[in-house]
Length: 404
Image (cartoon, rainbow, N blue to C red; front, side):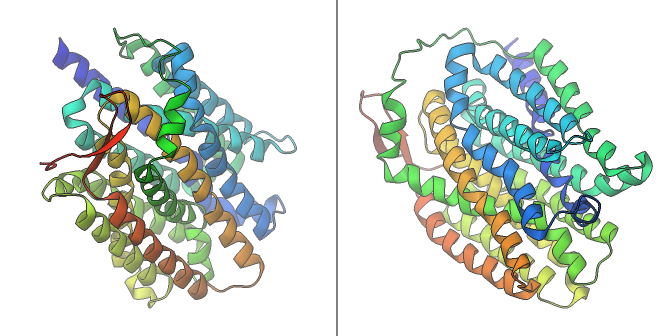
């Protein structure tokens, strides 16, 4: 019975994970078309790519609060419903609908993405880091589908509005599955139990900030790629469809590293070597795509995907590896994803401002590679094998022993 519950939860986790990236990756290949048909400037396009990420970060801390009020399962159902509504709204011919719908979708993704690591820690605590890799693989697959199918769906359905709206069907499908099959915990948590002091206690711990800043910087790179890579590739001479497929190939290559990175990280005493390896791949991939000759585009797309899939998978794994129980994992997830994604939102907007100011693709590429260097510094701090524990009644950082 327990085994059946675990399998059901894993399948539901994958179904939900598939929905947490198409809302953003499906816009990027159409961005040039949106700028032409909707009259968006580069700065306005930057705002469009930034808005869902910013709302994702602002809504993430709300997830633990909502989970205490109505339960994690119902909160995730509400998030999927909000996601579907936002995806439908952004395609309607109503002034501001594109931006409002994108904000709704980002908020829904923030809530759902924050809840899932804590649910994984609760349902399968002994394999939480490995299951997080599988969940990240589902995220990457959803992102690849959004990037690769965006232009073909526009051609098939006749307009970009219907193409963007069509992703709501996937969200509604996941909502139906989750609502009728969602796991129900027998555990009940008092709304007053450590609710006020938990966040403040976590914020006082340097480890929280190390994980948050690593999450924010690597996520900033990911959302810059989601929002701007096709546009930057078009500037280098790609056509719209080829640029979209290049990004899709990159995201597809994230699948293997998203699943494999937590396994590799278990082989050492801590996660620092694995974190540095995936960040190095990200930097090399960006250089090959945006600076090197065009003949390197496919190796560049693959290496970038390997780096970004692994770094995101490890960032989410840190949420469960750095906490002793599911409640702390939920609190840390809300803080880290909230602060991290709010920081990450500056990335896509910053690229839009740079393009508006006349910066070329090579300049932007070197700035991004420099940002990866800063991220490496926080990876060295966040990757140490420490863990937050409050079993003694006081929040402490303890050594966690070997990860294997």
